Length: 277
Image (cartoon, rainbow, N blue to C red; front, side, top):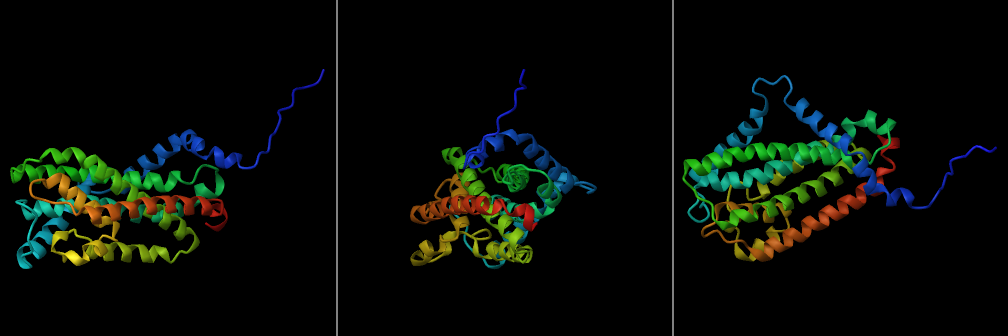
């Protein structure tokens, strides 16, 4: 009688073909990493999750005073300036936090990556999800502002999930690029904070993109967050707010390109992470 011996089949490209299946198999690890990061972020803090409300609220106050009062820049439509600013703060804070968290996510989980196999895409994705939780919590401030100023949203608010998805794609694409680059070149841990700070100043967070001269608006839309922020304001404020469709279309194409190239670069570098990290 002969024992049944398991047959080992080595097939080229089999691992690549099963990559997305492995992502589903390791979904519990994804939940664990995201929940762990949420708990660690606010552990041993006096006010806990309230930090997700305080930081964007204080930033909104500063921008309202500097741009709305001192610089006397115009709002959009009939919207109060605080709503104009906070409608932009929501996607920007999500994007900035996602970049900061995902760029260091692989380095922070070096012990796990070097010892256990799992699709590495789980790690930066869970970091983006944690930032998305902060985004949802910060939305409470927007609801409070709209109630305070009795601002009633129009039908455009129904399109807001579309712009949320675009902002998620932008954060994910940039996060994948920076996460992979940070493993190979540790200089990026110093570059990322500068990129976030610089991006805040060149994005229309504290002001309306309508103040940009018409002949420069398409060039200005090369910043993908311009289209995302304008889309949020168009959906939230409504009224007379107009969306610069050529610029929005360009920003949307750049976000898609950022997501696709970020995923491809991450996958190409993924097999070297355990050796380099």
